[in-house]
Image 1 (cartoon, one colour):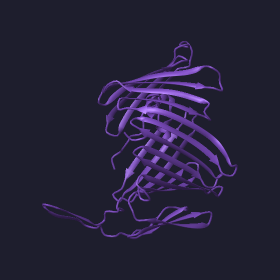
Image 2 (cartoon, one colour):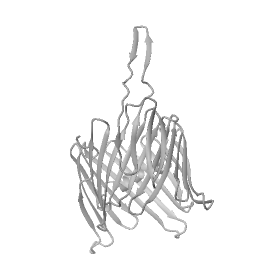
Image 3 (cartoon, helix red, strand yellow):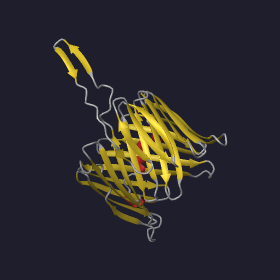
Image 4 (cartoon, one colour):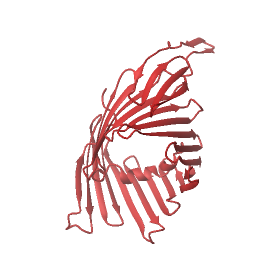
Length: 349
């Protein structure tokens, strides 16, 4: 079983407690489309309960033709087998005011990024795992992200994110690194222009046991901005975790159990050492009614209960309904009911 990221040590319990309760989440819509030349387009929109709306248009290019095994041969007792080399290709794609993908040859990819009238040239060696994503959202922010996976080193993923706000001419640059091995999962997030700041976390695992920590650091102030720690155990049918966040002042213990193929259960207790001796408790359960539908229910220590129902109408179309009730104030208007259609995982091209 692979080692999760630090934020995902208690993911199974948190997903069962928080996901699919639509009356608590913002309304979202997502439309996806893929082209034959590995370009994916996505349009997203979100409306929160305070009626604020936001949206984004995203274009993503994955260079699946890049790879190390362009010409290989192997021999066996039965004969010889040869894999032919794909022909080199060239293209020129305009990516908007902050990025331009200029050309690609057999050995490198030249990517020019325009930031505040300055040009930076990045030379990326021709190997598998390159993804280019450009996003424009309703805050008029243009983001360009370059991802390179398993090229610099096995298990290493590097992301560079460049942001430009035309209205204010503000720019941003971030570098994210993820390194994953069989018994280790580490991440580092750098904000190169603001601060600069760094946030790093790491998890080690052995036979299901997990231990991890995270810390933030501000280079300009030369100070640690925050730190957290966690321990856990993960098995195929259950998992448990204890986390200490907010400079080891907020403690949470969570438990998840997959009872069988139909029933799942989870519980979580939270104690804030700065807020007194009160402990918050929440339990939830999920029951799969049939292969295309399930029901969920949860209740917390304050007596607020929630239920949800989710059904797959057809591939790509899911409908859910959720409601919450304050069991201690049944006669008051504190209850919520909502019908929602979550964004589909994949739409036909």
